[in-house]
Image 1 (tube, rainbow, N blue to C red):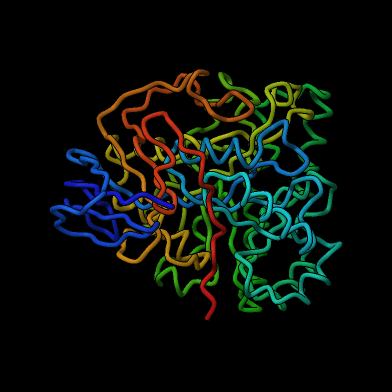
Image 2: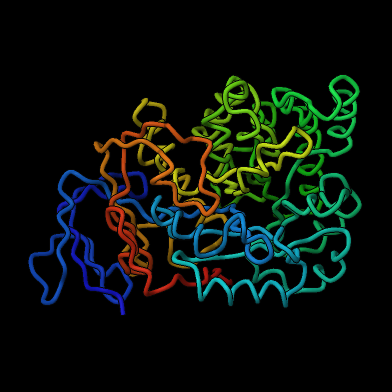
Length: 448
């Protein structure tokens, strides 16, 4: 049973406003927002000088369970998530086995119910092998279907490389279709050029030229054209180029968009200038690209061409990352630090707190039609995070909670700290301590 908690005199960041108020949590729900003098048997938290956000909803993570649990699992990565203010996540299908059937899909929900400290949702995997089964399902009840990560299993699994498969899916799927948008043909041609010159030891600085702007742009443009043809709901995952941002609309509200996109925090934080120092530690697919791309992505986030912020959290062991270019695994862990990264942009005057809440809390709930989460509203689930915007700390091995034990932002100095995280009204994280007795819940979708 969740606690009865009163948070007093706190600055609530919600729906475009910051208002100092009190808030009552009881039975896992936000029961009241307003002046609250006294309630029996309530724990009091003094919020003076601190800020309250809705819990962050991370719409793209790879928590590695089942089958890849030496990298991370639903317990370890959800623990890192709640320490970073993330109260809900949506996990991708590239586990072992790939989540390509409803049986495997439902099994992941069962595992998460026993292990995850945060609320959880999952994407059902789709590729050329199971598309006929997918389009026969009632996909309207799913958060989304996705091909992301499935190219690690075998070549040819990306929908962006298979227009006939993609068109068949767009014509029949009733849920959001979230795709990894790169043309593997272009990537392979570029790989061959650099392999001829450098062999297997291609310098990682060439990663954004191999997984190039052209490979991303052409795939995204074609996917959008096909989706518009069939009035499908298309979501482009982890956008990386300034050029692609111009393919998206900002003249209608998110609720009315059929074509949406996101940016992952590392594509806002790093650029190709960081490869000489960090090397394969920042090797992601799609690649981190130029300073121009980084600035263009932030601009598109601010003017609503980009709808949400995610992490694409993808842990690997350090050994797997530190291999030569072609053998080094792509991806890195970010979920513990995504909110802090966005708050650094706030400290630099590049984004407001209200827009951070919109892109990390409100919009993921709107996009994936998640029931009663993503906002600080009476009657909503008490998924909340309290922030101290004047508390400095440095990322180091001792405070990294990822199972893989490392982070590409190790050594980064942050000026803000998550002090409390509530999941369904349970105070799961408080100043470095965890309450792991009560687990998270499955995210429910609004069905009309």
